[in-house]
Length: 313
Ligand code: SF4
Ligand code: MG
Image (cartoon, rainbow, N blue to C red; front, side, top):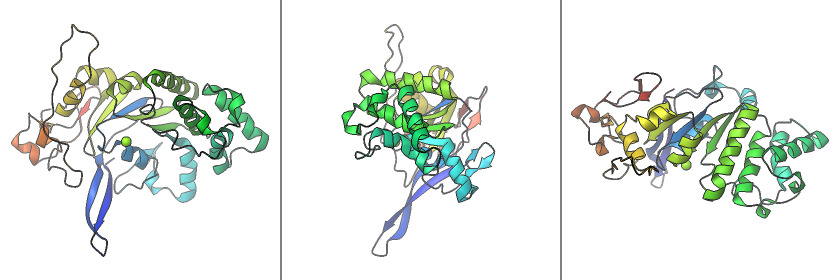
């Protein structure tokens, strides 16, 4: 609710704060237990920052993050430790996030050490089981990350995230660095694991086709704000926000019978240091009215949980 994350910009010899990068600039949204909420937007729109703020890997500047009825921004250290177990993250680059000097057995077991969950034989059993559920042979337990392919390394990252029996996993571009040929294998695995362990996913990606494949609902971000959220088919078939329409018009349609106008956005994405007043999209929107630069549109439900932040609705 109203989540903001501003990064200070410092300058001068005194390193005074001279401004802020408004990476997340007032986001309202909810994630339902057991669903996959896709979070899309161009790079720099704040989606990764929002994912990290939800996990408290970064502290929010303002707002509330409620999880099961608790505002986690108000939790004390010990309570937050308990909460951390419930929320894990999978990163885009599985290689950079795996310690090259640790065996994959140690990598997958490490979160169990951190949270004091299992030791010795019990831990090894659990690691073997995790290797199995992510589709890696248990014989690999003493090998090192560099001995694996990109797809296998992402499976290791997933196994590590699962080690603490989480409820929510923030997936930050988990297949973007992978070859197209292994993407669907990893996505299918993630879907199987979601069923098996009743997981909830926030799936961050700039790839609209991937998001369409995996999500139940989709949330669209532009310049630090959520501009539209709807059930997946509703969003892809009936996008309302002019920005969502432009984004979706760029996806190729496999059926040559179906014609769709390609909407080209004029100009660059404005800087998040000085986002446009009113609707952040008004500088590029061909439907902009005078009020758009003055009044910020609220995210409104226009029917059956289709939310849009635009003065046209
Ligand atoms: Fe365009 Fe105005 Fe809607 Fe913003 S509020 S998307 S500028 S019509
Ligand atoms: Mg990112």
